[in-house]
Image (tube, rainbow, N blue to C red; front, side, top):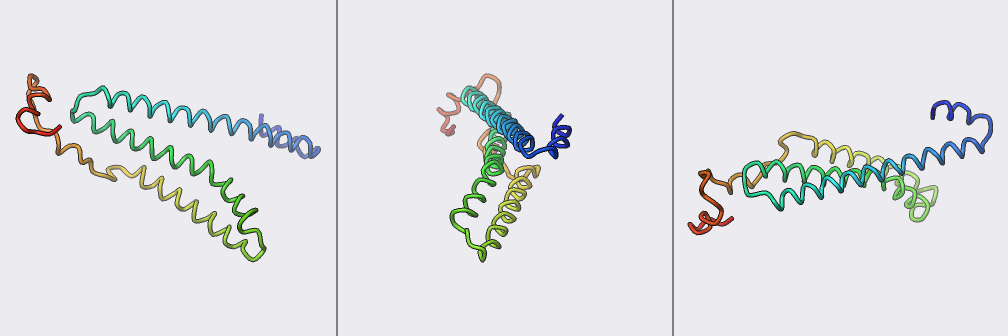
Length: 153
């Protein structure tokens, strides 16, 4: 549908502007849905972590929460990057001799986003410091008895 609209925009400039505006609105709505879904999942993870007992399985929930937080930051960087670059071009670096600086910042920010994605997606990129805090317990032993024995929780 959008390809047909793009092909028909050669007829006049009003249709081209209209097509770009509709595409922009759909893109913004998709961004809002993605942000809502990420925040919803982060909230569910926070509730689950608050209610779950201390166990080795909790480590995976913390890793998932960290991954969601990193993806949210990367996604927001992707969303706001064009706006920041336009603001820099129009307000700060608006002379012809500073055009190269905007290009350098555009490429550097893109490489920064790629590096952040690479670090986030690398499996086993960080060790969990929580696993050494847990010890093997029997099913009848609780956190209260562990605290009485002198182990901090």
